[in-house]
Image: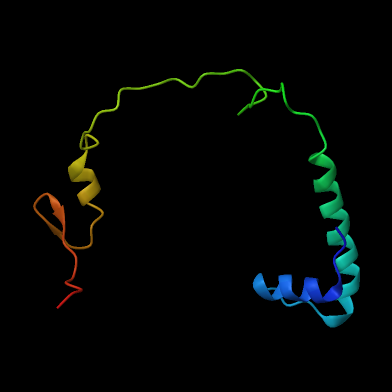
Length: 95
């Protein structure tokens, strides 16, 4: 897929990237090459290739899904600029 400078200008506008006029044509060539490589990847046969999340077959250790207070509520509340017993106190923002 070949891109022209007008398409690159539109892409730059959508991406909120300022590209000088002199760089539009070289950038169009570079982006066209990248899109060509992506099209080549689409031609690779991946029918019998299982999906993978890592290059090493590893299972992450699991832990019980339980709710707790973290074990140190007083230490956490010690960092609060203004605290109430057991809670953070914040200024009212809605009238």
